[in-house]
Image (cartoon, rainbow, N blue to C red; front, side, top):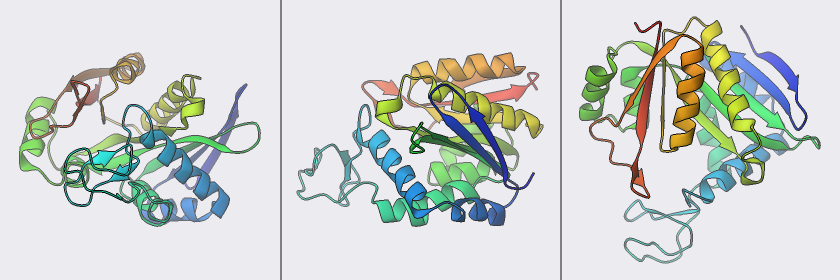
Length: 245
């Protein structure tokens, strides 16, 4: 598939789906968007991660902590910079978000006024590449995912990468729609293994139901080396294998 666009109209949203098979095609997809569209995607990202439960509005360059306000809650440094500046999102984060995971898919939802309400991405990457990108190459995490997930480090997996929904549009069924459309794309690509990570337990339950309904066997766990937690809940990594392979 090359830059496939599928438009699905629902009661509240128009959903566009772009699929691509290479880094060049992924770049072509993102480059085809207007500055307004890119800016709206960045705003959705900022709003999604700047609010509950993450509150990642500012970032401390000294200790690496995120904060809801401009003072660091860990080392008390003042006048923190934005955690996710718009220019960095548009010129660095989003392009990398697509071309790191190829072949892949980008889903974008628009409201009735053609404003971006949310987006979701996913695609193929080796387990080794995934750990390098998402876990800073932590060898403990890689070994744990190999052992507990039963995945060879060189094997390609379909990774459920990002799902960002503007807070004003959450709890409207958009997340479920994104997840199902992304999974259908993975299935159409004959995906043997689907992976992802989340700290949102209701989201994890949704993923388990959808993957099981598509004949995948699902397990989830917290790999060694992943210490991320929020409100006492540790982040979990899920592995879904086609037919329980």
